[in-house]
Image (cartoon, rainbow, N blue to C red; front, side, top):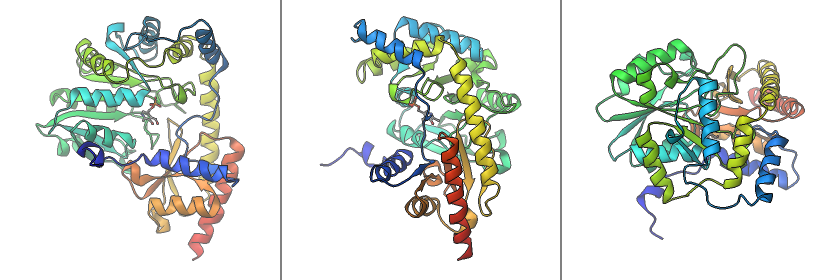
Length: 390
Ligand SMILES: Cc1ncc(COP(=O)(O)O)c(C=O)c1O
Protein backbone atom coordinates (compact mmCIF):
# COMPACT_ATOMS: atom_id res chain seq x y z
CA UNK A 1 0.00 0.00 0.00
CA UNK A 2 1.26 3.47 -0.84
CA UNK A 3 0.14 5.37 2.24
CA UNK A 4 -0.76 9.06 2.30
CA UNK A 5 2.10 11.47 3.09
CA UNK A 6 -0.09 12.66 5.93
CA UNK A 7 0.15 9.38 7.85
CA UNK A 8 3.66 8.30 6.87
CA UNK A 9 5.15 11.05 9.05
CA UNK A 10 3.07 10.20 12.10
CA UNK A 11 4.71 8.09 14.81
CA UNK A 12 2.89 5.82 17.29
CA UNK A 13 2.00 7.17 20.73
CA UNK A 14 4.88 6.34 23.10
CA UNK A 15 2.61 6.46 26.14
CA UNK A 16 0.19 3.94 24.69
CA UNK A 17 3.09 1.75 23.49
CA UNK A 18 4.69 1.37 26.94
CA UNK A 19 1.32 0.70 28.57
CA UNK A 20 0.66 -2.03 25.99
CA UNK A 21 4.07 -3.63 26.68
CA UNK A 22 3.53 -3.51 30.45
CA UNK A 23 0.05 -5.03 30.07
CA UNK A 24 1.41 -7.79 27.86
CA UNK A 25 4.11 -8.70 30.45
CA UNK A 26 1.45 -8.65 33.17
CA UNK A 27 -0.70 -10.93 31.00
CA UNK A 28 2.20 -13.37 30.86
CA UNK A 29 2.19 -13.55 34.66
CA UNK A 30 4.99 -11.09 35.51
CA UNK A 31 4.51 -8.87 38.55
CA UNK A 32 4.71 -5.52 36.74
CA UNK A 33 4.54 -2.19 38.57
CA UNK A 34 3.05 0.14 36.00
CA UNK A 35 4.09 3.77 36.43
CA UNK A 36 3.27 4.23 32.74
CA UNK A 37 -0.48 4.77 32.97
CA UNK A 38 -1.99 7.99 31.70
CA UNK A 39 -5.33 7.43 33.41
CA UNK A 40 -6.68 7.28 36.97
CA UNK A 41 -6.79 3.74 38.38
CA UNK A 42 -10.02 4.55 40.28
CA UNK A 43 -13.29 3.15 39.04
CA UNK A 44 -15.78 5.58 37.49
CA UNK A 45 -17.97 6.72 40.44
CA UNK A 46 -21.14 4.67 40.87
CA UNK A 47 -23.68 7.47 40.34
CA UNK A 48 -22.13 8.15 36.92
CA UNK A 49 -22.34 4.48 35.92
CA UNK A 50 -25.93 4.28 37.19
CA UNK A 51 -26.93 7.26 35.03
CA UNK A 52 -25.49 5.50 31.96
CA UNK A 53 -27.25 2.22 32.80
CA UNK A 54 -30.53 4.13 33.15
CA UNK A 55 -29.94 5.75 29.76
CA UNK A 56 -29.46 2.33 28.16
CA UNK A 57 -32.58 0.96 29.85
CA UNK A 58 -34.60 3.94 28.66
CA UNK A 59 -33.39 3.49 25.10
CA UNK A 60 -31.23 6.61 24.87
CA UNK A 61 -29.11 4.78 22.32
CA UNK A 62 -29.62 6.69 19.06
CA UNK A 63 -27.88 9.55 17.25
CA UNK A 64 -27.87 12.83 19.15
CA UNK A 65 -27.10 16.32 17.78
CA UNK A 66 -23.54 16.19 16.42
CA UNK A 67 -22.02 18.65 18.91
CA UNK A 68 -23.75 17.22 21.99
CA UNK A 69 -27.12 17.14 23.77
CA UNK A 70 -28.63 20.29 25.29
CA UNK A 71 -28.39 19.04 28.90
CA UNK A 72 -24.70 18.32 28.59
CA UNK A 73 -23.92 21.65 26.93
CA UNK A 74 -25.81 23.49 29.70
CA UNK A 75 -23.95 21.50 32.37
CA UNK A 76 -20.63 22.34 30.70
CA UNK A 77 -21.53 26.07 30.53
CA UNK A 78 -22.41 26.05 34.24
CA UNK A 79 -19.18 24.29 35.15
CA UNK A 80 -17.06 26.63 32.98
CA UNK A 81 -18.69 29.61 34.72
CA UNK A 82 -18.63 28.26 38.26
CA UNK A 83 -15.20 26.65 38.24
CA UNK A 84 -13.21 28.93 35.93
CA UNK A 85 -15.26 32.12 35.43
CA UNK A 86 -15.71 31.48 31.70
CA UNK A 87 -19.04 32.64 30.24
CA UNK A 88 -19.88 30.50 27.21
CA UNK A 89 -23.27 30.03 25.59
CA UNK A 90 -24.35 26.46 24.73
CA UNK A 91 -23.88 27.34 21.01
CA UNK A 92 -20.18 27.91 21.79
CA UNK A 93 -19.64 24.41 23.17
CA UNK A 94 -18.68 21.38 21.08
CA UNK A 95 -18.70 17.95 22.72
CA UNK A 96 -16.42 15.37 21.08
CA UNK A 97 -15.12 11.82 21.60
CA UNK A 98 -12.50 12.74 24.23
CA UNK A 99 -10.42 15.87 24.72
CA UNK A 100 -7.93 14.38 22.27
CA UNK A 101 -10.64 14.53 19.61
CA UNK A 102 -11.50 18.12 20.59
CA UNK A 103 -7.86 19.10 20.10
CA UNK A 104 -7.57 17.22 16.81
CA UNK A 105 -10.67 19.01 15.49
CA UNK A 106 -9.29 22.42 16.47
CA UNK A 107 -6.11 22.03 14.42
CA UNK A 108 -8.06 20.66 11.46
CA UNK A 109 -10.30 23.71 11.52
CA UNK A 110 -7.88 26.58 12.23
CA UNK A 111 -4.63 25.53 10.51
CA UNK A 112 -3.52 25.84 6.89
CA UNK A 113 -0.33 24.58 5.27
CA UNK A 114 2.53 26.87 6.26
CA UNK A 115 0.94 27.97 9.54
CA UNK A 116 3.07 27.53 12.63
CA UNK A 117 1.89 26.41 16.05
CA UNK A 118 4.03 27.05 19.11
CA UNK A 119 4.36 24.06 21.42
CA UNK A 120 6.32 24.38 24.67
CA UNK A 121 8.52 21.35 25.37
CA UNK A 122 8.17 19.01 27.23
CA UNK A 123 4.76 18.52 25.63
CA UNK A 124 1.98 15.97 25.64
CA UNK A 125 2.93 13.49 22.93
CA UNK A 126 -0.08 14.00 20.64
CA UNK A 127 0.20 17.78 20.10
CA UNK A 128 3.05 17.51 17.61
CA UNK A 129 1.42 14.82 15.48
CA UNK A 130 -1.96 16.59 15.54
CA UNK A 131 -0.42 19.84 14.31
CA UNK A 132 1.42 17.96 11.54
CA UNK A 133 -1.76 16.09 10.56
CA UNK A 134 -3.40 19.46 10.02
CA UNK A 135 -0.59 20.41 7.58
CA UNK A 136 0.90 22.99 9.98
CA UNK A 137 4.36 23.12 11.52
CA UNK A 138 5.00 22.68 15.25
CA UNK A 139 7.55 25.17 16.58
CA UNK A 140 9.07 23.96 19.81
CA UNK A 141 10.02 26.29 22.65
CA UNK A 142 12.23 24.45 25.11
CA UNK A 143 11.63 24.92 28.81
CA UNK A 144 13.50 23.42 31.75
CA UNK A 145 13.49 23.18 35.54
CA UNK A 146 15.20 26.61 35.57
CA UNK A 147 11.88 28.18 34.56
CA UNK A 148 9.69 25.51 36.23
CA UNK A 149 8.98 24.10 32.74
CA UNK A 150 7.07 27.24 31.76
CA UNK A 151 7.35 29.57 28.77
CA UNK A 152 7.72 33.31 29.18
CA UNK A 153 7.74 36.27 26.79
CA UNK A 154 11.49 36.27 26.20
CA UNK A 155 11.42 32.60 25.17
CA UNK A 156 8.37 33.34 23.04
CA UNK A 157 9.94 36.24 21.15
CA UNK A 158 12.50 33.95 19.53
CA UNK A 159 9.79 31.65 18.12
CA UNK A 160 7.20 34.11 16.86
CA UNK A 161 6.96 35.32 13.26
CA UNK A 162 4.18 36.24 10.83
CA UNK A 163 3.33 32.59 10.20
CA UNK A 164 2.60 31.95 13.90
CA UNK A 165 -1.04 31.00 14.20
CA UNK A 166 -1.52 29.47 17.61
CA UNK A 167 0.08 28.51 20.89
CA UNK A 168 -0.71 25.43 22.96
CA UNK A 169 -0.90 26.03 26.68
CA UNK A 170 -1.22 22.96 28.91
CA UNK A 171 -1.57 23.86 32.59
CA UNK A 172 -1.46 21.70 34.71
CA UNK A 173 0.98 20.02 32.39
CA UNK A 174 1.41 16.47 31.24
CA UNK A 175 4.23 15.38 31.68
CA UNK A 176 5.71 17.91 34.16
CA UNK A 177 2.84 18.75 36.53
CA UNK A 178 3.82 22.40 36.26
CA UNK A 179 1.04 24.98 36.87
CA UNK A 180 1.10 28.61 35.65
CA UNK A 181 0.18 31.30 38.19
CA UNK A 182 -1.90 34.37 37.45
CA UNK A 183 1.04 36.73 36.93
CA UNK A 184 2.65 34.39 34.40
CA UNK A 185 -0.66 34.01 32.57
CA UNK A 186 -1.22 37.76 32.48
CA UNK A 187 2.20 38.31 30.91
CA UNK A 188 1.55 35.61 28.34
CA UNK A 189 -1.93 36.96 27.57
CA UNK A 190 -0.54 40.47 26.89
CA UNK A 191 2.05 39.04 24.56
CA UNK A 192 -0.41 36.77 22.73
CA UNK A 193 -2.88 39.62 22.23
CA UNK A 194 -0.21 42.00 20.93
CA UNK A 195 0.98 39.41 18.41
CA UNK A 196 -2.53 38.22 17.52
CA UNK A 197 -1.74 34.59 18.38
CA UNK A 198 -4.56 32.20 19.16
CA UNK A 199 -4.29 30.18 22.40
CA UNK A 200 -5.42 26.60 22.64
CA UNK A 201 -5.68 26.01 26.35
CA UNK A 202 -5.75 22.33 27.29
CA UNK A 203 -7.12 22.31 30.84
CA UNK A 204 -7.90 18.60 31.16
CA UNK A 205 -6.01 18.37 34.50
CA UNK A 206 -7.51 21.60 35.90
CA UNK A 207 -9.18 19.92 38.87
CA UNK A 208 -6.19 17.74 39.81
CA UNK A 209 -4.17 20.29 41.68
CA UNK A 210 -2.13 20.20 44.92
CA UNK A 211 -0.75 22.37 47.70
CA UNK A 212 -1.54 26.05 47.24
CA UNK A 213 -1.65 25.87 43.43
CA UNK A 214 -4.79 27.18 41.73
CA UNK A 215 -5.93 26.43 38.24
CA UNK A 216 -6.71 29.65 36.38
CA UNK A 217 -7.90 29.57 32.80
CA UNK A 218 -6.01 32.09 30.68
CA UNK A 219 -9.32 32.79 28.91
CA UNK A 220 -10.78 34.17 32.16
CA UNK A 221 -8.29 37.04 32.39
CA UNK A 222 -10.08 39.54 30.13
CA UNK A 223 -12.58 39.77 27.27
CA UNK A 224 -9.91 40.05 24.57
CA UNK A 225 -8.00 36.90 25.56
CA UNK A 226 -11.34 35.08 26.05
CA UNK A 227 -12.15 35.74 22.37
CA UNK A 228 -8.68 34.64 21.29
CA UNK A 229 -8.62 31.34 23.23
CA UNK A 230 -10.18 27.94 22.73
CA UNK A 231 -10.54 26.12 26.05
CA UNK A 232 -10.41 22.31 26.02
CA UNK A 233 -11.54 20.20 28.96
CA UNK A 234 -13.34 16.95 29.69
CA UNK A 235 -14.34 14.42 32.33
CA UNK A 236 -11.73 11.74 31.45
CA UNK A 237 -9.17 12.48 34.17
CA UNK A 238 -11.35 14.29 36.72
CA UNK A 239 -13.98 11.56 37.03
CA UNK A 240 -11.93 8.50 35.99
CA UNK A 241 -13.86 8.33 32.71
CA UNK A 242 -11.10 7.78 30.15
CA UNK A 243 -12.93 4.92 28.42
CA UNK A 244 -16.18 6.81 27.99
CA UNK A 245 -14.65 9.11 25.40
CA UNK A 246 -16.11 12.52 26.14
CA UNK A 247 -14.22 15.80 25.78
CA UNK A 248 -15.37 19.32 25.02
CA UNK A 249 -14.29 22.81 24.09
CA UNK A 250 -15.54 26.36 24.49
CA UNK A 251 -14.93 28.88 21.74
CA UNK A 252 -16.58 31.52 19.52
CA UNK A 253 -19.76 30.67 17.59
CA UNK A 254 -18.01 30.59 14.22
CA UNK A 255 -15.26 28.17 15.33
CA UNK A 256 -17.82 25.99 17.16
CA UNK A 257 -19.92 25.84 14.02
CA UNK A 258 -16.88 24.95 11.83
CA UNK A 259 -15.90 22.15 14.24
CA UNK A 260 -19.51 20.98 14.20
CA UNK A 261 -19.37 20.67 10.40
CA UNK A 262 -16.13 18.68 10.62
CA UNK A 263 -17.70 16.36 13.18
CA UNK A 264 -20.86 16.02 11.02
CA UNK A 265 -18.75 14.30 8.39
CA UNK A 266 -16.35 12.37 10.60
CA UNK A 267 -17.58 10.92 13.92
CA UNK A 268 -21.06 12.51 14.19
CA UNK A 269 -22.06 12.73 17.86
CA UNK A 270 -20.04 11.33 20.76
CA UNK A 271 -21.72 8.25 22.28
CA UNK A 272 -25.23 9.06 23.52
CA UNK A 273 -24.84 7.01 26.72
CA UNK A 274 -21.51 8.60 27.59
CA UNK A 275 -23.07 12.04 27.21
CA UNK A 276 -25.66 11.18 29.85
CA UNK A 277 -22.88 9.86 32.09
CA UNK A 278 -20.97 13.13 31.60
CA UNK A 279 -24.03 15.15 32.68
CA UNK A 280 -24.18 13.06 35.87
CA UNK A 281 -20.44 13.60 36.42
CA UNK A 282 -20.50 17.36 35.95
CA UNK A 283 -23.79 18.09 37.74
CA UNK A 284 -23.61 15.40 40.42
CA UNK A 285 -21.97 15.29 43.84
CA UNK A 286 -18.34 16.43 43.53
CA UNK A 287 -17.06 14.68 46.68
CA UNK A 288 -15.68 11.87 44.47
CA UNK A 289 -13.31 14.40 42.88
CA UNK A 290 -12.12 15.69 46.25
CA UNK A 291 -11.46 12.13 47.42
CA UNK A 292 -9.47 11.29 44.29
CA UNK A 293 -7.44 14.51 44.55
CA UNK A 294 -6.55 13.82 48.23
CA UNK A 295 -5.48 10.29 47.34
CA UNK A 296 -3.40 11.56 44.39
CA UNK A 297 -1.71 14.04 46.72
CA UNK A 298 -0.84 11.29 49.23
CA UNK A 299 0.62 9.22 46.39
CA UNK A 300 2.58 12.15 45.01
CA UNK A 301 4.09 12.77 48.46
CA UNK A 302 4.94 9.08 48.79
CA UNK A 303 6.67 9.10 45.41
CA UNK A 304 8.59 12.25 46.31
CA UNK A 305 9.83 10.85 49.62
CA UNK A 306 10.98 7.67 47.83
CA UNK A 307 12.61 9.37 44.83
CA UNK A 308 14.42 11.87 47.08
CA UNK A 309 16.47 9.00 48.49
CA UNK A 310 17.64 7.74 45.09
CA UNK A 311 21.01 9.16 44.03
CA UNK A 312 21.13 9.83 40.32
CA UNK A 313 17.46 10.67 39.84
CA UNK A 314 16.33 14.30 40.06
CA UNK A 315 12.72 15.29 39.85
CA UNK A 316 10.47 18.29 39.43
CA UNK A 317 7.81 18.54 42.15
CA UNK A 318 4.46 18.44 40.36
CA UNK A 319 1.68 20.77 41.52
CA UNK A 320 -0.97 19.31 39.27
CA UNK A 321 -1.91 16.23 37.15
CA UNK A 322 -0.60 12.81 38.27
CA UNK A 323 2.91 12.52 36.88
CA UNK A 324 6.46 13.05 38.15
CA UNK A 325 8.97 13.99 35.48
CA UNK A 326 12.44 12.78 36.45
CA UNK A 327 15.87 13.69 35.11
CA UNK A 328 17.82 10.43 34.73
CA UNK A 329 20.71 11.81 32.66
CA UNK A 330 23.23 11.22 35.52
CA UNK A 331 22.80 7.49 34.94
CA UNK A 332 24.26 7.67 31.41
CA UNK A 333 21.24 6.14 29.67
CA UNK A 334 18.86 7.65 27.15
CA UNK A 335 15.24 7.82 28.24
CA UNK A 336 14.33 4.88 26.04
CA UNK A 337 17.22 2.76 27.35
CA UNK A 338 16.25 3.64 30.91
CA UNK A 339 12.58 2.77 30.40
CA UNK A 340 13.10 -0.45 28.48
CA UNK A 341 15.84 -1.76 30.80
CA UNK A 342 13.82 -0.91 33.91
CA UNK A 343 10.86 -2.79 32.48
CA UNK A 344 12.85 -5.80 31.31
CA UNK A 345 15.14 -6.09 34.34
CA UNK A 346 12.84 -5.03 37.22
CA UNK A 347 9.33 -5.19 35.72
CA UNK A 348 8.75 -1.50 36.38
CA UNK A 349 7.13 0.54 33.59
CA UNK A 350 7.62 4.26 33.02
CA UNK A 351 7.41 6.41 29.89
CA UNK A 352 10.58 7.64 28.11
CA UNK A 353 10.79 11.44 27.91
CA UNK A 354 11.83 11.33 24.25
CA UNK A 355 8.17 11.24 23.19
CA UNK A 356 7.58 14.38 25.27
CA UNK A 357 10.56 16.13 23.65
CA UNK A 358 13.11 15.56 26.45
CA UNK A 359 15.34 12.52 26.15
CA UNK A 360 17.07 13.12 29.50
CA UNK A 361 13.85 12.47 31.42
CA UNK A 362 11.28 9.74 32.10
CA UNK A 363 7.69 10.12 33.31
CA UNK A 364 6.34 8.19 36.29
CA UNK A 365 2.58 8.25 36.79
CA UNK A 366 1.24 8.04 40.35
CA UNK A 367 -2.16 6.81 39.23
CA UNK A 368 -1.42 3.52 41.01
CA UNK A 369 -2.00 2.35 44.58
CA UNK A 370 0.30 3.26 47.49
CA UNK A 371 1.54 -0.35 48.00
CA UNK A 372 2.39 -0.51 44.27
CA UNK A 373 4.23 2.80 44.52
CA UNK A 374 6.27 1.51 47.47
CA UNK A 375 7.10 -1.72 45.66
CA UNK A 376 8.05 0.15 42.48
CA UNK A 377 10.23 2.71 44.25
CA UNK A 378 12.11 -0.07 46.10
CA UNK A 379 12.82 -1.83 42.82
CA UNK A 380 13.97 1.40 41.14
CA UNK A 381 16.24 2.25 44.11
CA UNK A 382 17.88 -1.18 44.02
CA UNK A 383 18.28 -1.11 40.22
CA UNK A 384 19.78 2.40 40.21
CA UNK A 385 22.24 1.45 42.99
CA UNK A 386 23.46 -1.49 40.89
CA UNK A 387 23.66 0.67 37.77
CA UNK A 388 25.83 3.24 39.56
CA UNK A 389 28.21 0.58 40.86
CA UNK A 390 29.12 -0.57 37.33
C1 LIG B 1 -2.58 16.88 28.27
C2 LIG B 1 -3.65 15.99 27.77
N1 LIG B 1 -4.59 16.48 26.97
C3 LIG B 1 -5.58 15.73 26.48
C4 LIG B 1 -5.67 14.37 26.79
C5 LIG B 1 -6.77 13.54 26.18
O1 LIG B 1 -7.80 13.25 27.04
P1 LIG B 1 -9.02 12.33 26.60
O2 LIG B 1 -8.82 10.99 27.20
O3 LIG B 1 -10.25 13.04 27.11
O4 LIG B 1 -9.02 12.27 25.11
C6 LIG B 1 -4.69 13.79 27.61
C7 LIG B 1 -4.72 12.35 27.90
O5 LIG B 1 -3.75 11.74 28.27
C8 LIG B 1 -3.67 14.62 28.12
O6 LIG B 1 -2.72 14.12 28.93
